[in-house]
Image 1: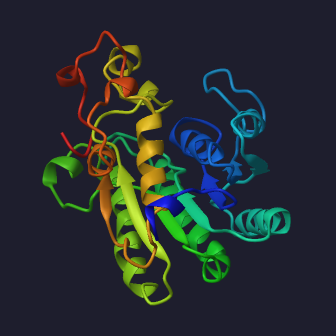
Image 2 (image 1 turned 30 degrees about the vertical axis):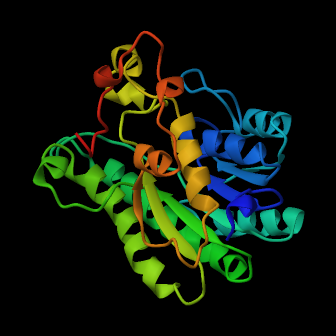
Length: 279
């Protein structure tokens, strides 16, 4: 793919967890290219503690220049995912890109992790990513330059990642193992499977779990992950696959040297908090 072709114009992107945070930011970046964005999430009505719904995200995407389809969907359930994929194909004629962004988080040790919470982690993060991929694959097979992008960390088995929250860490690493396996499984079909993960903490609703405003101040905006995702998703799917990318490294390879736009002006680069899996 030539550099001049690196646009998502006319592409249809199916993004899970796209009502807010990183998922919405990826959708907004695609909208600037006039892409079609399918917003998959559970939030259909305003929540007291969480900003945004699938409908407000759709409005923002269309205001940014894209075409949006908001689909209420809980990715734990086969019938809802299959119906969402069918609606996307009916509206836009196919699916070119899947972004497995939706994720449950629970940062606690073994004794502090009830089995109900454990099941949620694995149903959303692991099974949900597998299910959405499986449902989109028939359409990705016939797409031009098809990509699957998982929001998951490099699959390094460092004990410090597991010590305090084994269940959550295992669920995120499993998403990366889907990338590892499926990149090889579908290499000949030309479907790219990659992962992207932030170098620093990102300012999303998850910060309510990580420490609130004190942490938020030292976080980058979701826009940096969105720009990295755009760079990945516009690469040649036959040659760029099976990679575990870090947002900042992706952008540096694209020639970006100044990252001040992604942090608060009163925060220095060395004050930013490293991500949970990279610190």
